[in-house]
Length: 332
Image (tube, rainbow, N blue to C red):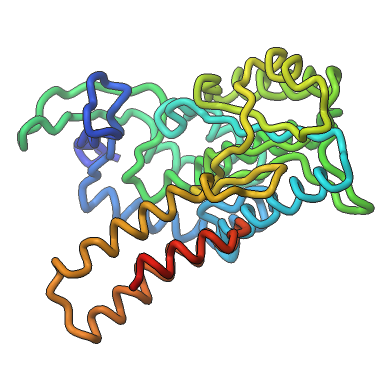
């Protein structure tokens, strides 16, 4: 594939209102039309077989798998462990610059392990290797530099290739002697949504060692590193060695973690935990009068904006009566 077709313009999108360093920006790749047509054709061939080659623990970008199922399952596991006073921990790991740092050589090797034909692997290789970038600065293109790792977030192939790379962690953890959560014939050690990683396991020193060994093996193979500053762990109240566990893993111990935008915890959620949703709904309602909408427009606004936001949270969390009262008062 000619170099010009793969050349990509990078737009830096700030993650916060006051971005001060390069780490505060998210690079979004703008691929040209010819490349997108080629990569989309390859992605369409890859998409139907993704459910059969990627384990069920991964729900991101996989057809027929829904993200809210992960939230419901995670909350059910925590509720079961809390009621049965099980010695279980739940750790949420944040992967630093996941799409931008994954090893391309590892992805190609993983495709070979999955049994893809050499011709298909060569197509993918031509799409992701020898890519040059330009930076969009004030509407103009500046620079022309090569890259040695990472996937472009604007490429149709990237989500599927990244899921195949993250599936390696599932294989490492399943083949490891790490002990997850078990109930009768049901076993689960982790949940994935793209790079959002949630790990459940037996709270024991030996098990923490097995987990860290699995993470180190995955890091050395893929080039993906865990950001400990943004990672955290939650533990049930009856576990007395909570401080020792968090210090051993190097994670911050919290009462709850936010998984896919919804708070989950071993304990029952309080109204203070649901304030982010309430603030979002109240903020949208406050702009109701400023928007000159007809009755039909307001109905659509409620149906697709307000109700969908509440429904997403309800699927994963348990709302208190006081929360519903606040919502009702805000709607008056």
